[in-house]
Image (cartoon, rainbow, N blue to C red; front, side, top):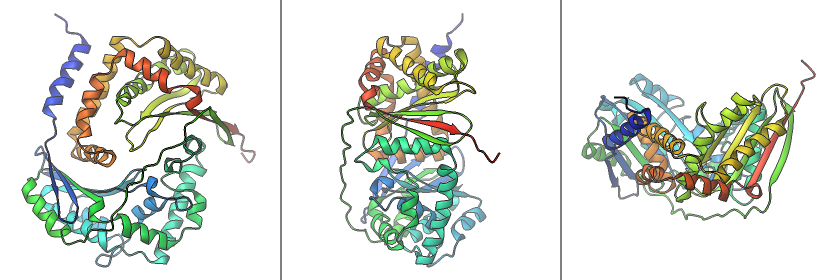
Length: 438
C-alpha cells in the first residue's frame, strides 16, 4: 500500500514539532539583563550570545550607520584586552565568533565547547563596558566601513536598486535607510556620536543573553550573574513609535548603471508577523517563489524563459509593518517590461482564484519543516528565539507555527488582494549601461 508523499511530510512535521518544542528558561538580573537558556545535550557544545536592542531603526537623520560601525569597533579592543584579542582568545579555545547588525538589533555570538562557556561570558561582559573608542580608532574603522559599503552597494547595481526601493518605500520611518548607513553620513561621522551610541544602548538593561547547548540553567545563570551582575544599568531608553505615511500611489524609479542584465524589484507595504495576516503573507511568498515548482519560476524562468531568476518574499520579522518583495533578473535579450508584466500577472491570478488546498498544504509543510529542522542547530535555536525576542518576545515562535498551520487558500487569495496592489507598490528598475572601457 502506497502512502502519499504529502502525508509523509505532514507526519514528519507534526511529529517533529512535538520533539522540538523549546523549553526556555528565563531569568532577569537586578541590573535588567535578561537571560534565556535552552538545554540541548546532543553534543558537548554551547553557543553564548549577547543581543542588544539597537539597530539602524534607532538612528537619526544624518547619523546613519552608527550601529553597524559600533559592531566593528567591538572587536578593536578594550581597556583589558588589546585589538583582535577577543577573536584570537575564542579561537585558541577551539571556538568561533562573529556578529551581526540589523534594522532592529545587534548581536554577538560565540560557539565552543560547553565546558569553556565562562570564557565568552567574561569577554562579552568586558566589552559591554570597557570598549576603547578613540577618535583615531573610530575614523580608521569608518574608512573600512565606507569601503565595505562601496563594494556591497555602489559597485553592485542590484543591491543599489534594492536599497533605493527601501528608501523610496518609506518616507517617514527609519526603515528607509540602510543598516550600513549612507555614504555621506559615514563621510562626516562624528566620533562623539558613536561614543554616545555605545553608552546609551550597550547596557545590561538593553541587552539579552542567550545560551543554548550542553548546559544546566541554574549553573549558567550563576556564572552570568557573577560577570555581568556588577555592570550598572544604563539610562532608560524610551521606546518610540513611528508610523510611515500612507502610500497613495505607486512610486517608481529607474537606475542607470553599468551592468549585464536588466533587473527589477517591487515592494508592497504589509503588516509584520505579529499581525494575523502575516502568516498568510508568508505562505503567499513561498507559493510564488520557493523552489522550481513555484509559480514565478515556472512562468518566468521555465515556461517563457523571460528571466534567469524570479522571486518573491514576505519580510515580517520586524517591529513595525514592513514589506513584501517581488523581483527578477531578465534573461539575455529579454525586455524588463515583459518580465514585470509576467510577475504582476501571477499575482493577479492568485487574487482571482485562490491556490489549491494541495498547493497551500505543500507550502505550509515546507515552511514548517524548514523552521523545525533549523532547530537542530544550537546556533539557529538561539538565533530564532533572539530574533523573536527583539521584535516582540521570544514566545512569538510558538505562535508562528500555529499561525502558519491555520492559513487557508482563501486567506492567501485575500491577503494578495488586500496588500499586493499597485497603489502600495514601489518599483525600481535597473537599466544596464555598457562599460565603454571594456
